[in-house]
Image (cartoon, rainbow, N blue to C red):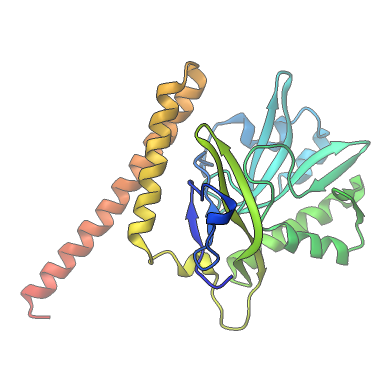
Length: 271
């Protein structure tokens, strides 16, 4: 891949339409707030992970999103703290408890993209520590859960310290929407070279028209989901997402307004 990553909710409409010089990577629209009373964010609410194990997992310096079934909440998607939406870019793994052991997988099910961008970094640390590797992930005995937590936190530390760089790879990711299937490239966090900043951070101030287009596409999808939705719970979720988006856009407007005021004052001084 030679181009800068373009994060987008909407992808190419066919695999042939993907452009390796402008790699699209899926960006989710379901928000993961930093602070929330949502029970799906609390690992101890899992009905399948033993409570003593869940208590240890609470030390993870990240965010959880539990899968929901009729009986309650079960398995956990694990994200770094910088995750704002439910997608693969800042997800490290999927945790479930089965056959008497905690199992660490890259992903499960159809919720979000079918990979976790931070998983290779975690898998490398798990191999170094001799964890049992299976076809779909790693087995973590109860007496090594604390070590797993330390390794997950180490991956998050590496990400924040700029020791990992997000790179698009030549692997296709797909998402299915009401208007059909969309295609993207996958991206993984790799060890960064000396003096190299993470691509995600470097891209923040670039391609503003493209980023605005992505925000507008997200707003259209939220509006469409609200029109199609018949259930109160989902409508409340969409409303919460829209209000948070509005609040964040208000902050952006305030920052720009203050910047323009500073420019005007500098001009008055002849600067």
